[in-house]
Image (cartoon, rainbow, N blue to C red):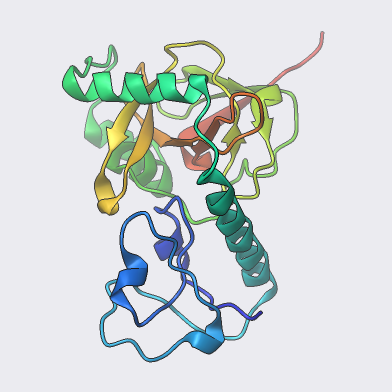
Length: 233
Ligand SMILES: [Zn+2]
C-alpha cells in the first residue's frame, strides 16, 4: 500500500496519524483519518496542509511510524489506560482547576538570548520540533536529561526507550513532582501537556501507549532537554 506523505508540521502536534481524504467525516475528533493513496481524490475542503510526492527514504520511515500508530490506535480501543496513567489524568484535571505557580521565573528577553530559536519556541511558546529532528532522539549514553531552561533533573537515561514516534520517549520521570501535567485541548484534541515544575517550560505530552506495565510514554522534545553524561572517577 502506498501512502501519502505529509509535511511534518501536520503530524507533529497530533497524537494520531493523518491521512488524506475528501470526506470531512474522516477528520472528526477521535477518528483516525487514514486512507491509502489510491483512495485520494481532490479535496474541496482541506483544513490541513498536506504534501503528496514520491517517497524519500526518511519519509518511508515516517510512513512506517504512521502505520505503527494506526495499529496502536486500533489496539488502544480495547485497552483501558493503566492506573498510573489514570493518576496522571487526575493530576492534569486538578492542575486545570488550580494551577500552581512555578518557583523560577525568567525574563523572556534573557531567554531569547540564552536559548536557541527552537529551544525558545518549544519551551516558551509550547512548540514542537520537527519529527526525527531532535538531537537526543537516538541518544544512548548513561546520564540525566535535564530541563534546558532551568537545569531541573527530569529523566534518567534508563527511563528512555525507542518508541519510534520521532521524539525522545521516557517511561517515567526521576521523581514525582519533577514535571507538571496539565490538560491541553489545543488543536481540537484532548492531550496531557508536560511542563517543568520548576520553571514552567513546555516539554511535550504524555500518552498511554508506552511500555508495560504502566504504559506511560512521555513524548518530549529534544529542544526542551539538556543531557548530563554520567562519568566514573
Ligand atoms: Zn525547567
